Each structure stands twice: as structure tokens, then as C-alpha cells.
Amino acid sequence: MTTSSFQHRRCLTATPGAVFAAIADPARLARWWGPAGFTNTFQAFTFQTGGRWTFTMHGPDGQDYANEAVFAEIVPDARVRIRHTCPPLFDLTITLHATPAGTEVSWVQQFDDPAVAAAVRHIVEPANEQNLDRLAAELARSAPATGR
Image (cartoon, rainbow, N blue to C red; front, side):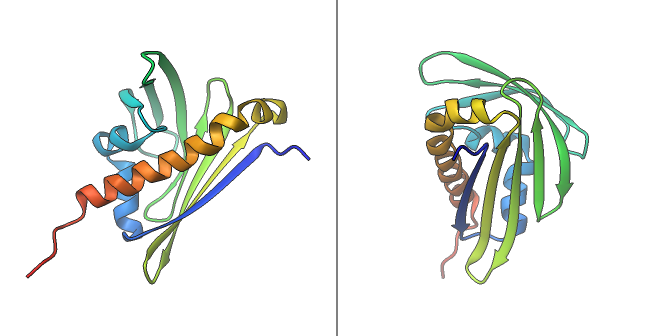
């Protein structure tokens, strides 16, 4: 059975507000967005429902990947839905749910075309996990120091 949806979950030791802040702040998002080894340059970032997000992902192999998206839905501290408006076409929904240990992040990427999803599965599945790894590292980096 072929599916056009990729679902990932991760429990992070940060509040939903802290996770949301790492998405809403373009400087922080640029640090963690994308698979391992990628960097980003944002040309436009209007973090509001209907706002544009235009950016270039720079691969570790030196290739640049242009991206265009719209923030289709933003619910502070709870959910961000991104509509990728250039090929490949997909929706990405990031949902934040408070847990006793922090936040469960649900990352659901739904491609418009099941054939495209099947063709990129081998890239998307590990890349989404790497994205969540990088988000966790960004949260750890920005966590307030504790001690006595």
C-alpha cells in the first residue's frame, strides 16, 4: 500500500511555548530547519496565517534548493501548518502537545501526489527525523542554565 503521508513523533524536554518559539523565530528556525548538514537563507518570513516563507536550503554537497511556502495555520504554542507551494507540493503540520516531561511533537507531512511521495520516501523519512534531531539540539542550546 502506498501512502502520501509521513508521520513522525518526538518527545522533547521543553514546553510547548519553547518549541513554538524555536519555530516562530526566523534566526532559530534557520539554524535547525532541514536535514543534517543543511543550512538556510531566508528571503521572506512572515510568521502569520497566510504569511509567506521563501528560503534557500544549502546542501552539504554545495547545491542550493529554493523553497516557497505559506503559513496556512498558526495556533500559538499548539500547531503550525505549512503549505509548500513549489514542487514537491505538500502540507506539513507540526502539532505540539504538553506532556509531564515537556512536549510531544507530531510532524505530519502530506504530499499531494502519492507517486511523488513514493519517489521521495527514502529521502523524506530520515530527513524528517534529522529535522526533529536538530530541533531538539536547538532547544537544548537555548535552554536556560540551571544549577545552584
